[in-house]
Image (cartoon, rainbow over all chains, first blue to last red; front, side, top):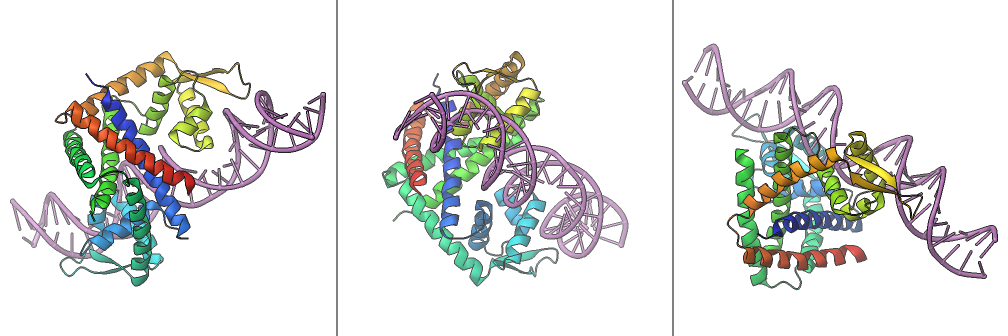
Length: 148
Length: 148
DNA sequence: CAAAATAATTGACAAAGTCAACTTAAATGA
DNA sequence: TCATTTAAGTTGACTTTGTCAATTATTTTG
């Protein structure tokens, strides 16, 4: 019986810690005051056509109330604007303002650069294998969490 | 040019989210009120001979003040006791009480079981490859973060 | 159309993380 | 050797993130 399982957990914890630190440094270097969480919000809004608060809560696995407040903040900072959802009067579409888009792109660029450095000595093939294995495990993990 | 980098980040974020949820469920099932963070603290104390607060802050990459307070809490709950460090009067050794050990083992067992399910359809060899690639990337990531 | 479900918001709070100042002891080096 | 610097731990004050429950305005469904 292997003991790789424990390593697995430690590995994930350390990696995510590293990614957070990296993201914070990037924010600081760019003189932007948003936290990694806001970056995630901007990213999803950017990548999602007709993005709604509900969708964000769902995909980021955050509380709906929390998402409401996160959105309020980026709206206050004029990074995001709301527009009516013609299909549902309870809901509103979110999209980046020009300022928001520019912020996002600045961060995304630095973020991509960091990720690229991170995989510098890892070939495309090796990375693909890594992600494939990871995807299997993530899927198992999700299955465990659903039924518990 | 591959676009695997973005996937990489999403993968880590989702996985760590899944692990947190899994750990919370385990806690709940076991009727224990500690959070994943406390589990991490107990784990490190358990695995480290002559564990100190400073060491914990270092290895968990948390603020020293925060660690002090986390320790206070587990000490209050009688899961951990402090004893003088004979080599340094500023410092104290931490170790699990019987109650703490029993808590820890209960959680560790369930945690291991979850990790085992997570890698159910992943061979030892595949997992090893995964961790090797991961270790390379983590090391790159740490290098980036040091010098920034 | 009444009842149930859904999108979003709000209040109130708990947990986690950050920053700086401070105390006590240890290490260093003229 | 003893003043200076460094280190371990603690504390205060604060911000950010996460949680839970209740509420309003719609939409969906039987």
